[in-house]
Image (tube, rainbow, N blue to C red):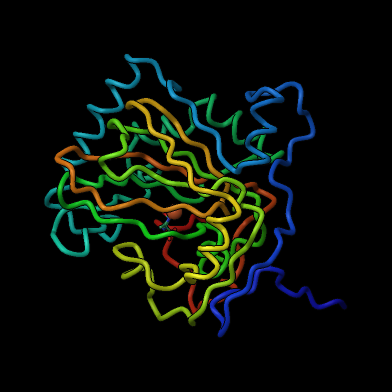
Length: 289
Ligand code: 6CS
Ligand code: FE
């Protein structure tokens, strides 16, 4: 019986840059689908795709009202899905909104989003994780450079790179309020990170990630190779990005919040198994099993 060696080992003793061993786009129909052939090609080459006006102005107004409702409701909440900023008591993220909130559950099952996900992942899909990141004005801290897949593989047991995220802007994402930055093309390299995963790492990592972040040399190499892009746009814009693209965002010292709702679509052929580099799987609100 051949022992399946893990092509994406991480959290060991030395950094490595490993070529991606998985396709980026799994679709078998490049012509017909939500994305045009050109859009699909851009996504495959760059690992992301930006839609400046995905939602209509009316839809966007409702998104904003619902986000403000969740913010108000969340003020006194203590549940584990409510993650606070590392240096203040401000809410940083609310996880599992697709599970807990009827409006966001319906939004993230919008037929446009599901057909986009089915086309990219080439199969039926499900939501692996959802969250609203509020990144409040003045207090919203950074999300350091990382690959989501590195965490989802190491800590959630996601076998292969057959998942992607969408980020829907709930407020304007402009150069001043800490928008998401990507390294285009970096999704083709898996950066193996140093350092064994501490127990209950997520209780710290969701506030300020310390493990599963790439080393300076690997980041410098990737930045030189790929450059850095910063897709910005109004509320209602949407960014789709591959599970393994290197991304991050700066702290928000502007008065304006940078609030986005994220959802991760995973292929049903890529369901989670035991973590590849952690002692325990993470809880349900971070990784749907
Ligand atoms: O650990 C996670 O699953 C989360 N952490 C980051 C920084 N991005 C992906 C995801 O929300
Ligand atoms: Fe991320």
